[in-house]
Length: 165
Image 1 (tube, rainbow, N blue to C red):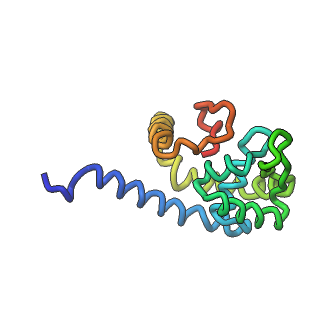
Image 2 (cartoon, rainbow, N blue to C red):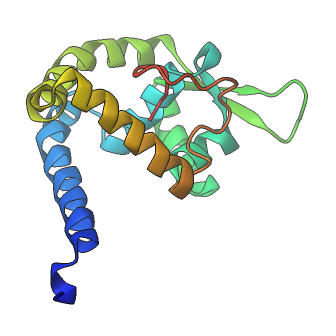
Image 3 (cartoon, rainbow, N blue to C red):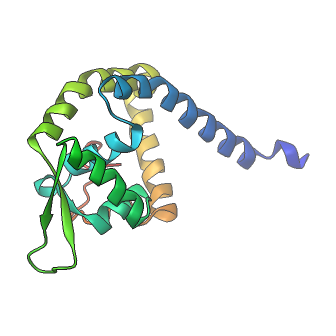
């Protein structure tokens, strides 16, 4: 077998092409709402977390940003009024990023079109069973390559909408 025709290379290449393509299809909607992809990821992770908040360290782990990277993102979102910070009562060294009401409203405004984009360019191309199988496969891979992706979430349900990522 030709090593250049290895199906593992094909799988990785297709995955990268799909991610890049989906990103280019969905980012204009986010940009129109004044959000970058990392802004949206941060806000949606907060929105889908208990009490709409996460410890900064957990948020960094979930987004795979460094602590200083997530601090810069949260600083910017806080200046825009989309996120607030709150002290951790049990650990003075820790703080929480909390989705503000303005952040909630910004997400509510962008979600209908963003979900429509996702449906058009991604999930709507799959049958219900294909989507269930795809989500299961993605979670299995994610749990190996990014075990911190659900950091700070008390109970992770396997329902399609229960996780942040």
